Image (cartoon, rainbow, N blue to C red; front, side):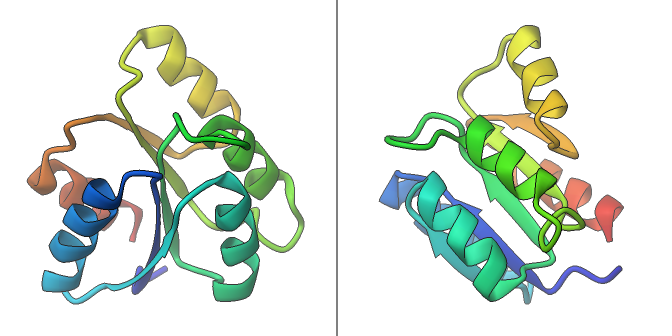
Amino acid sequence: MTIKKILVVDDSPTERFALTELLSARGYQVVTAENGEDAIAKSKSEMPDLILMDVVMPGINGYQATRMIARSESTRSIPIIICTTKGLETDRIWGMRQGAHDYLVKPVDGAELLVRIQALG
């Protein structure tokens, strides 16, 4: 699977901007969402090749959104990389149990993120 379109989910405008700049510069098409509800809706309407999911957001958090996307018939094939400040091993394990394919702790190293994206593609 070739990754072309990436959905960036983060309630921080600064994080969304930084990830959009990094990914756009590498030729990826970037779609953004500000919260879990928006992420679930856009995962269905945009059908991205990959989702980068923050955890700490108002309303539906990233773990809940990951679980809903990973268990939905129409979106379960979309890989999700959780990108969060929650760095404990128990947080990572919980994120993977919700259906995430990978887990990165913020601040996300751009080069490391690109390597992980390429590994999925």
